[in-house]
Image (cartoon, rainbow, N blue to C red; front, top):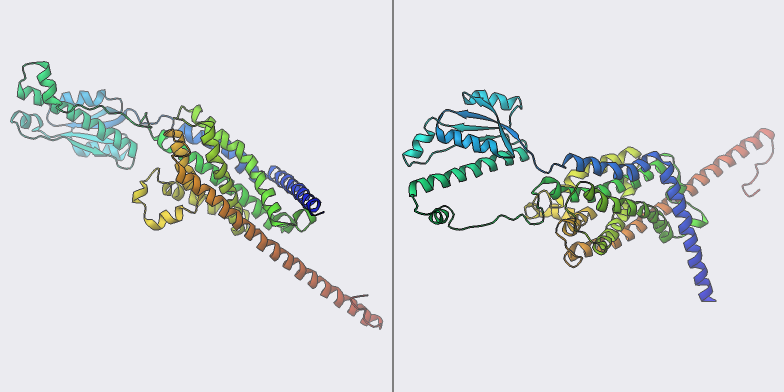
Length: 431
């Protein structure tokens, strides 16, 4: 008898979960705002963001040259600088103020300045200098100008060394110019581009933020319409915290299982980004990450009173959360208090874990810290969501009972007034 009762309760619980899932899915599909944030934004926003950074690095950055030396060495430096793939000499100016005016008009992003005694000091065996002025407002253009100038200066230094030393053989010149040989090999980010370094983290952050927007928008809509039955309905299908939470979360998890596969597998291949994920590691990471994001969003939805609130809360946190993941700013340089705050968000561990398996070919054992942290967050936010929904149920029922008492009191007052007018005794509430 006990086993039959248990099986019956399990069967009823599954039916109630399916009912709640179908109702939540119907609500998500019919709500235009939820549909946009949960389907359209994850489909198209990653494409737009990846397309913007698809070039990876900047090419042919315009630079102005102020050559007051007019010498063979300065012209050699300018030719080598212009031959680089990242920079080009766009203007030749007579003085620095003229070149500075070009930077103010954003026609160039840097200046090469050769003093009048540039070659003279070299032939005197004195140290000469080349002024490199860069527009620091753009990191990529600054990097292109400075690194190209540094490479040309190094090559020119080698040639001057060989001329002054006067080696007998080519081998003597090789040893003199480069006594310690080295090869530069870029690990993981083979292109050295901005897209391969940042886009994987942004993709994972998009999953979390759009999921929070969808869940919060749905909760805000229910509160605006005063639909308490959609928040914490009072019916036989909603007799149980677990079935409510599991039914609602399964709806968003199913939607984002498809969105997660699309964002993590399809988008990087569309734009040729480095992707070394395997099916097992991707499934192992995405399962706790999506669950943690879902329960986190459901728990935080209690803070949303109006539809507009969720936009302010979620969009405002997008950039800080990206910085706190440690992919665009070194984790070691983040203050301890902000590292503690970052531990509260699933995106922190999801971004780090996905970057490891996607760009570095890591396994679940290699990202054990992130993997375990996501499961811990899943459990914590699941129970927090249960507590939040239980509080909402108690609050809703007390609100409904209080409103019913008010209606009964008003009805009793109406009956008393009617009875007084008719000269009859007032009808009791039981009657």
